[in-house]
Image (cartoon, rainbow, N blue to C red):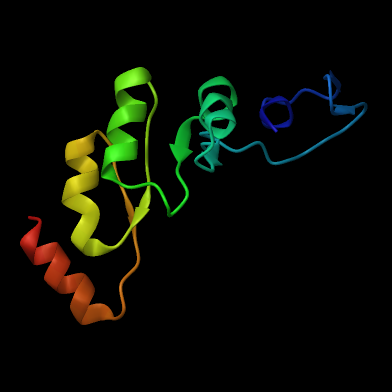
Length: 114
């Protein structure tokens, strides 16, 4: 995708190749690639190929903290319940994806985190 987004027409990779390809318009800026999963391989894939690691829902703040200690350069953006955002940020996450049941819950969260 990065090759296409940069305007390259040909790419020869280990697992994927293309020739005479086009994809326009080229995004500017290029979208970030978030790599999901919580296995060791997913974390390594995020380090190698991605812009951020988006851990699976089973990853808790302790897991995030351990991964950040091993890979401080890794951007971590987990999906969490509103009540767990602070714990994830304290563990080293750079942000969070939060779902809300309704607008009132979202407004309440926003007021508490100003």
